Picture 1 (spheres, protein in one colour):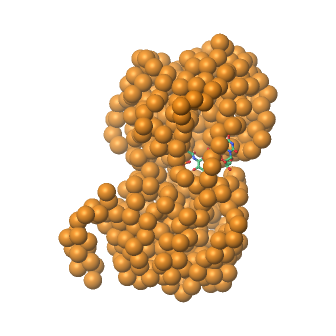
Picture 2 (cartoon, protein in one colour):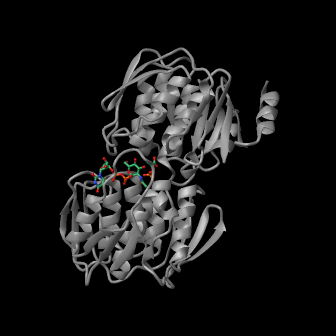
Amino acid sequence: MEQYIIKGGRPLVGEVTIGGAKNAALGILAAAIMTNDTVTIENLPNVRDINVLLQAIEGIGAKVERVNSNIVKINGSQIGSVSIDYEFIRKIRASYYLLGALLGKYKKAQVALPGGCNIGSRPIDQHIKGFEALGAKVNIEHGMIDAHAKELIGKHIYLDVVSVGATINIMLASCLADGKTTLENAAKEPHIVDVANFLNSMGADIKGAGTDVIKITGVKELKGSEYSIIPDQIEAGTFMLAAAATHGDVLVKNVIPKHLEAITAKLVEIGAQVEEFDDSVRVVATKRLGHTHIKTLPYPGFPTDMQPQMASLLAVSKGTSIVTESIFENRFKYVDELSRMGATVKVEGNSAIIDGVKGLTGAVVSAPDLRAGAALVIAGLVAEGFTIVDQIEYIERGYEDFDEKLQGLGARMEKVDIEDEKAVKKFKLKVS
Ligand SMILES: CC(=O)N[C@H]1[C@@H](OP(=O)(O)OP(=O)(O)OC[C@H]2O[C@@H](n3ccc(=O)[nH]c3=O)[C@H](O)[C@@H]2O)O[C@H](CO)[C@@H](O)[C@@H]1O
Ligand SMILES: C=C(OP(=O)(O)O)C(=O)O
């Protein structure tokens, strides 16, 4: 087990390059097994969730060749099983995409119920509603979802809630169905568009991704493709907020500035400077920033996956901010940890009321989930003294080389073994 040790109090300065989007990559890897040809995927983030999904795909017989840490070739022609029952697959959310992909290709699939971050109850009724509308029978037994159909037939499907996962899953299953599927009240996140673009590059016929009505005309088969995944909006946003919180000056490279608008707008509102270039953004903060109110919403609203990191920034900004979480009911688990570092935050219902303090002090804290973990690292970078963040396996689910990228911006932090007291002492000596 590893942990981060951080000596805070230094502005982040320099350039950082953002990797491929985890949440697009998960849908794309599942889609890749839907053809019997070879698919090459570039700009794949080398993070834990992706590696778990690749192992699952290999486990059912697909050929997975890692060309390097960010390029993979996948061939799904030898898939011998449609049953994914690995203990580890339950740890990731996106295992559910194998349901849509296998159901679309083989008209049957059995996948363990998904895991992912424990940020709320996270039902999958809309995925099931979509599969059933296409003609599948879906049963849940012994922790497994079983879906099968004689044939899948395109339908008009209206999602009762805007769901990223259900939108992608229904796109996956319906692109090999007979006839046309119209998906209304679809999610519009950039990763939805990326998965649709990838499927179209394989020969699918999907129109309207990025709007709330997606039309999918089924095709007989999909073919091989070479595809590069879009940059990770959330990784980029995390570095933008870390730059602002530490009063730094960071050029965040390899991004699509349009995808970052909700974050940029809030940063500008509280007094940071944000300069947009073609494929990078520069964030500069020279003084303590101001307060604002945030409400998480589906894209293009403020992303729930940026809510904890924004709370860390507002915890050290001037004035009172209110952060309202409207997507998941249990996404404030980091608040107690932030309070241990001196933040003044009170949770009332689905809002956190943050009274900004001048500074934080380092403490030993635990990452309760992926983005909350990133938020605690931001707090540690700001805090006076040493912060230890443990349970970093959550952070590594979604951030590639997080410690190394932050070190590249001047952060004094290291990843050390939790048992290795000498390493902690050595780090403390080095930075004192
Ligand atoms: C792997 C992945 O891409 N994860 C992202 C995905 O999660 P995920 O796909 O799980 O999130 P959804 O967009 O599906 O969830 C949105 C809301 O809809 C509800 N809901 C969802 C499905 C369903 O069948 N029934 C239902 O009620 C959820 O409880 C939640 O309140 O989108 C979330 C919202 O942007 C992000 O925080 C996650 O990082
Ligand atoms: C919540 C997240 O991931 P998952 O849906 O895989 O738990 C996330 O990426 O912030």
